[in-house]
Image (cartoon, rainbow over all chains, first blue to last red; front, top):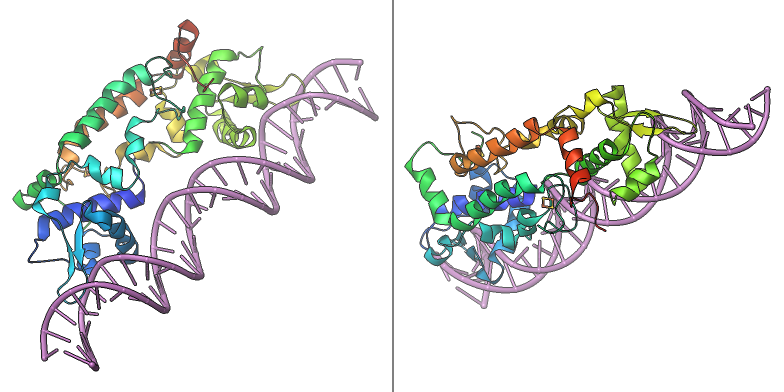
Length: 145
Length: 145
DNA sequence: ATAATTAAAGATATATTTATCTTTAATTAT
DNA sequence: ATAATTAAAGATAAATATATCTTTAATTAT
Ligand code: FES
Ligand code: FES
């Protein structure tokens, strides 16, 4: 469904939202371990997510690390896809035609569009903080342990 | 959603099912043009689909080309994913965890599983011939013209 | 001020996917 | 039989995705 980059971005963001606060920032090592992701690659991805403080925030230096603001927690999961330039995926033709449209539909369009709508709805309504809250509550996981 | 390879495989198969018969086989050039796909790459992909006559059939030589049997037309679209080794996609965790399961669900699992079920159902019940028939009927397309 | 710590930025490496080109084999028509 | 046509197979190339490593900059504690 998504690229590795986007999967790591989603897992890292959820992990940060669940574990961090402005007072307790997380280092790249902890994030990578907590999400079963390669540390240096995850670092690169977090750079994209912190650019312009779009989703994740960070500070360098001792006791520095990554955290997410209460504001940003309210963003839909969709905004992570946007930051990773993978939001196009939600709107593509499932057979790879240049456009997915009602006026020039592919043979799978009619049935796929209902599924697509649910996908879009899921990513646009579910917020980062909702996903993070789920984990705290119960038996929900963000790694392979 | 799918790799380029799989997209080309789906489009080519639908095109062949729509236009060919045992008497009227299609050359690689016609298939590539009819589906807006790169000819030599599509040729490679058709080799995978013809291996063991799994889905597509072919004959070399003059008046040769690709066609699909009435039997094969009854296969679900899912069988094309199988042939392209991309059937795993339907069962993966949307966050990229090693397993998607009820017992160790990721934060998106509960909501995604309903969508996933519909995707699986679509690919397992829709047949190649149904997709091809749709095109003949009306305003349904398999290329970008 | 200095040293220590941490992320940011940049350079590089590896693997995979996508794509093309060339040679071979099969089939058919003459 | 020979030549023509077509797909199969194999080799190679280009592009992209994934991953790591090194250097730099920022911040903090001493
Ligand atoms: S046109 Fe193919 S999914 Fe909409
Ligand atoms: S565990 Fe992630 S989608 Fe099922």
